[in-house]
Length: 233
Image (cartoon, rainbow, N blue to C red; front, side, top):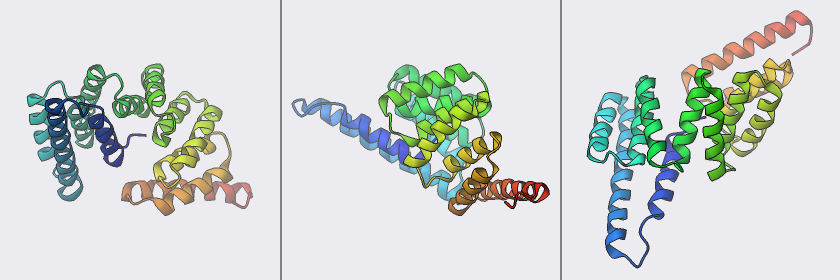
C-alpha cells in the first residue's frame, strides 16, 4: 500500500537526521536547511491537496523544487505522489524510478513504485523485488507488508497473500485499505465469512466516500450470495 502523508513525513525526518554530524557545522547547516525546505514543501503540498484539492498548484510547486534540486530524492518522491494524485501515473512512475536511482535506500519510493506496479497488475516480479528491498530497510512496516501481500494477490497466490495481509493488519490494524485487501484475499479463497467480517470492519474505519461505497457493494454482494446459498451470512 502507498502511504504518502505520515509515512513520508517519517521518511523525511529519518533521512535528514542522517546527514552531517555535530563536528561539521557547515554540513549540519546544509542538512538542516534541506530538512526545513523539505518539510515546508511537504506540508504545503499536502495542504494544497488536502484542503483546497488544488493538485495542479501542488504539482507546479514540486516541479519547481525538482528543477532547482534535481538530485533530491525526497522532492522526486513527493512530486511522484502528487502526479499520482493528479491521475498522471506515467509521470508518477517516472519520478519514483528516479528517486530510487538517486537513493536506492529510499524505502518509501521503493514501496510506492512496487505497489503501483502491483496495483496495475504489471511487472509483478519487479514489484516484489522493490517491496522486498523496502522491507529490508523497514521489516515491520505494515504498509510495505500489505504491498507484498498485494503482489501475491495479483498473482493469484491467495494463501500467501493472506499470510502477508494478516500480518499487515496486525501492524496497521486501523487502516481500512489494508483490511479491505485482506477481505479481498479471503473472498478469492472462498472464505466468505472472514471476507464479510473484514469488509464490515474496513467500512467502519473508512473515511473516504469512494471506498465506503465500494465496501458496501462488496458487503451486499456477499450477503446476497449467502442468502442464496442458505449459509446465513
